[in-house]
Amino acid sequence: MSIHPIIKMGHPTLRQVAKPVAPADIDSAKMHTLIADMIETLHDAGGIGLAAPQINQPIQLAIIEVPGGPSRYGEIEPIPLTVFFNPVLTVIEPEEAGYWEGCLSVPGLRGFVYRPQHVRVDYMDASGNDATLELQGFLATVVQHEFDHLAGRLYVDHIRDMTQLVFEDEWLAQQTPDSVD
Image (cartoon, rainbow, N blue to C red; front, side, top):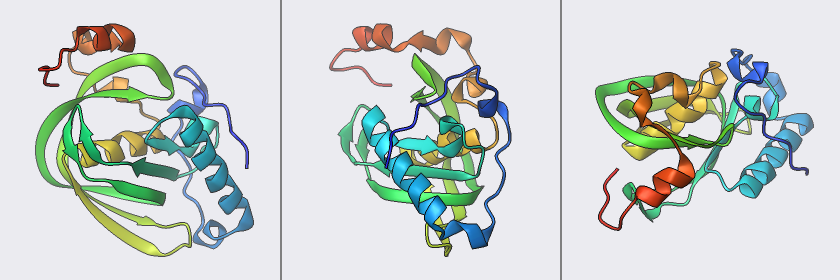
């Protein structure tokens, strides 16, 4: 296993549409090594999600691990470490909510982004099996953020009001115990 450098906004791979992974290639030693490297890279960076394009691998692969519990977004359900190959996202309910998003490929910035809050994800897991998840609230936002990387998009593309793009350290300094995002 090894930690890969996370590429940053401006790198052309982040703006490419990632290629689907052939089902026959999913349960391979090469993919299992890549997944292990992505997990190590994610944990080293302290994130909750990482898409393969963020480590300059333009394929439809993302991992998400949300510890859950209390957060600045309220009580969050956990998502155990989940591997998504070739995910297809379907909006169940178009009602949106906004969250302050950050990204390992856009370090030091946060932006307020509105996204649908009830989605379904159909995907293949690390063994090549079909799987489905239905998510709501913050977790729906998390999967949309990660899967944007597979479509060559970043969260900054979704910001409606550019005054809501801020440096993270300044944003944190302005937070108070009673702040609501």
